[in-house]
Amino acid sequence: MNTIAQTKQALKNSHRRGFSLVEVLVVLTIVAGLLGIGAMTVSSLSAGNLKDSALNLSTALRYTYNQAGMNNTQYRIVLDLDQNTYHSEIVRAAYFESSTPSEEDAEFLTEEARELERKKREQESLFDKDEDNPFGVNRKVSYERVQDGLVKTKPLKEGVRIARVYTAGGDIIDSGLAAINYFPMGWQDPVVVHLEDSSGAVFSLITEPLTGRVKLLSDEYIPDDDFGLGEDDD
Image 1 (cartoon, rainbow, N blue to C red):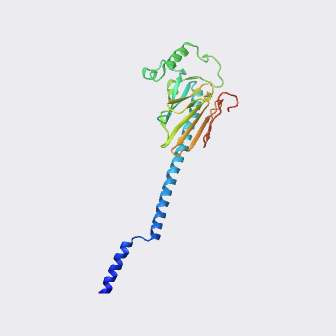
Image 2: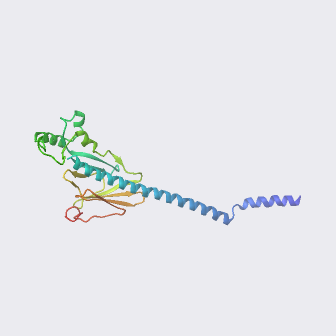
Image 3: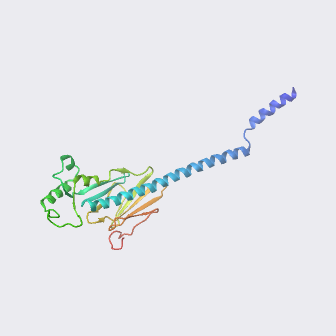
């Protein structure tokens, strides 16, 4: 009986003692490892979202540059730094093939664009009907084609924001709206756009005015004060 009592007492003492130091260290090591894996996963997702957002915006900028030339129309990309979205707008109307746009279509254009469109109609066509046009050049486009060239409002990836925009001459926009203009003759505004994620990592997008290209840097590029004003900016 004494042996049974002693065994029970030993078991009680074992339960009271709890985990040994080695057991506690093993548990802490496992927890630390799991936390590390979680942090790496979050960091990887954040970095992926930043890169994807930079690539998507770069594609939209190049696309709008091309649309301006193809449609003989001035566009602009509007960056909303408060909402972290971007979209394109028609700034000036093109030569339209059709008659006056419908009321619904006309509401889409700004007053400046509508006035310019009216003036264009009063001018002669870019090509006479009997004019030889061996290269098939046609600067006239339909309203639908101009409208189809727009970039609808797109948000950045989760955790990514438009931190700031550098414009020609050294102006810095860090809130509100910033616009990048695209002209039919093949020119885009020189700007530097910084995209930033929650970890503080930055991607820089640098537009090249004459080529329509957009440079991507996985770092924070700070332009000079005379950025966009000289001949060597490209």
